[in-house]
Image (tube, rainbow, N blue to C red):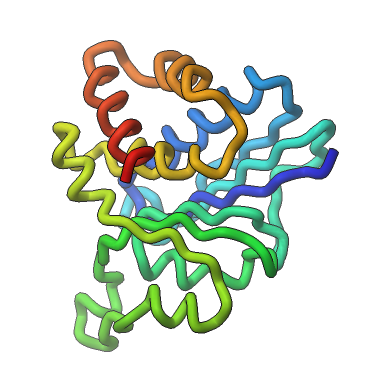
Length: 190
């Protein structure tokens, strides 16, 4: 069995740690050997962050090199484009269309790139882009973008929805569970 590689990328404070823990739990419960890296980047300061999730029969390292990612799950559009070179030729990007200005844009040194989804698809990349922020708000909290993305990602896995729900129940505090279940369902159904 081959090892599957997932990169979770975004901006600090968007919930990538919970998303990686949810995936790790789901895949462990499904019987895979799983390695999850720590969050790398300026997560406390709104900077770029990346987490690796690798699973298969036997996984020896949590690190994903350029050209090895089967999936890139991106919380922010520019981050999807920034990490695109890590995607395999037949890989899939699942991205939120939200745009969060990085510091060079905030200071006026650069402009936020336009038409990023088109640029990525023109480069031959499969991109599944949706407004996760809008769906998270519909679920009850802008902080649920991560779970909306997990719902969308679930389309690409042959793992029953009830297993995703069990992993969600194991990772999310009870008082936020119903809202997160709704966020997952909205992402899955988008």
